Image (cartoon, rainbow, N blue to C red; front, side, top):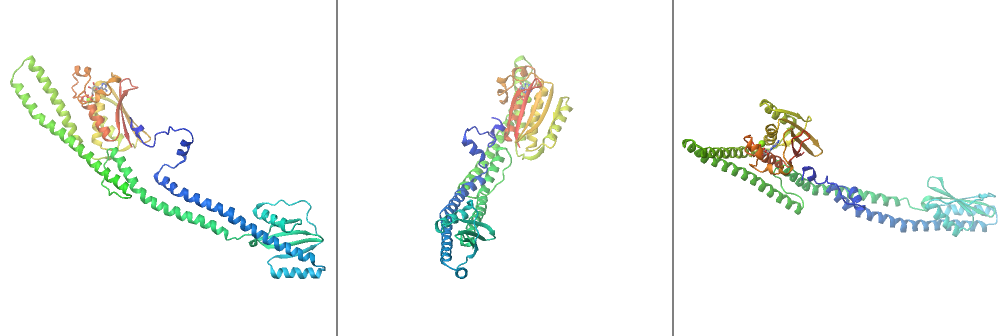
Length: 454
Ligand SMILES: Nc1ncnc2c1ncn2[C@@H]1O[C@H](COP(=O)(O)OP(=O)(O)OP(=O)(O)O)[C@@H](O)[C@H]1O
Ligand SMILES: [Mg+2]
């Protein structure tokens, strides 16, 4: 599996239908998701409460208030129609002005327009309903007559009665305060939730970052497990795991170094003894075997020595590869590099350099020319080492990574390697959380591809 495919979260979602759509709409971060989980029911409950309030309370209120206004108007009309003279009428109107907050005027002889008015809005329709039931005469309503006032005109037998009433007779403006409180309390709730969530998410985020760093072979500093008990438990377990992995790494290299070192002494003794034994065909073969063992032991020792204690630092890949190839050119190799400027990566520079040097050395040794290219693909840096040599058959491309494994041709050609180069290179790259694979090169030979996470 390549480093690219391993990037969790970058994986395409293969689900079909509405589920996939919901997943695509939903936020990705834990913070946003938990906020959503917390706030959705609250906001839904508030919406239901507002709706019920409007439907039951607000409408009923307006209904009743409209009936009260319509009743008053009907009462005024009846009083006026009972009056015989104009004087009595103005007396009634004066009485209405004293006892109610309606402003009533008479327009003798006036007529309302013949066509029926169309009522719009809840206020007009509710009032029209009430007037139709109580007054039972043609009427018009004008809610835009003045600010916070509305006008009702009713057709009487000998004129038009004009009634001005304040809007507060029909509904209470304080109702809006209810809505404001709803929105205000929701905002306060969101603020409090964000504060609490932040504190809960921070330890999880830190744990994720630490795990990511460990996966990429970078240094993970000690941190104090914090937050909810589950998160604290996971963080503590993570720290124990980190210690165990580091201990194992150290143990492995120490053992490798120890074994290789101790093998050197008997090997040197054997060589000395053989030198004193003189010449002969059997001894010649023995000498070759001892020499091979020596190369192997030296290779192991070099690997084990370099491994210990190097820490990751931001490294300019262009500079690192440039230095490496300059060394190779001095030894007469034909190498070319294409690396973009400013490709900086957190790596153990000496280890990575050794890994790359092994690949370049192979290309130079088994082919003739070598091309090194580096590129960044999103979260991954890819380094190709291409050559124009014989390449490696597809079925052998995993085998050659085994320590001390060498293909037959190279044994015959007396190219003198231990067979550790590729094993060491892959070990180094995997220690950085990446991978090393072999492919066919567009240049005709072998392509070694290093993938490193950013
Ligand atoms: N670029 C290449 N082209 C063809 N064959 C290769 C190439 N690179 C490696 N090989 C084959 O893979 C084998 C293993 O390579 P590896 O680098 O691990 O060991 P080595 O080169 O033989 O020895 P060392 O690198 O330890 O000096 C080689 O012996 C060689 O047969
Ligand atoms: Mg090699």
